[in-house]
Length: 202
Ligand SMILES: [Ca+2]
Image (cartoon, rainbow, N blue to C red):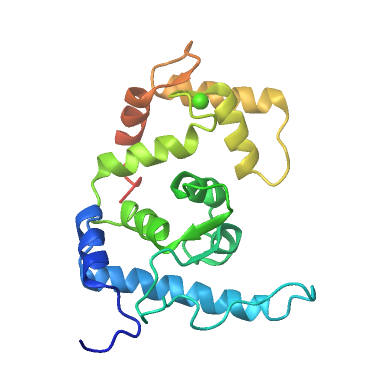
């Protein structure tokens, strides 16, 4: 049977391998990152002054049989503000929202794995671009509209920009992809814009 502690059940691992571009070593590596955030969260939660709040235990991620519970979750807000790759990213919260299926505000390990594998170098540029489109299409209507871009500009900048500056920036983006008079970028325009930016989604 081997040691179950800190292992996934075989069928769970097989599902992960089928659903992501990751091999087992990479899946466990992603889990280590999640666990590290869990430990940080426990530490932060242990000093919560609210007496009705119960800080999570250090073995909360194991199920009754001692395997890692893939549904084990952490607050999305905590991940967005503490994960080294995300905390400087103005779109971090938005990125997490795309991968979280429920409105619980919690991200499960399954969702976390989906997110980190999507943006890993092992995933195709097409898939990364498709996810980036979702992140930027704020109202999820299939078009990155001028309004969506105004919302994004507000996310990037510390101080709100005035309307005419925002309009100017968005006009320049649209001119750049030869869509001067368009209402926004559809997926095709977006792929084109990304293809001109070699640093994206490496
Ligand atoms: Ca939109």
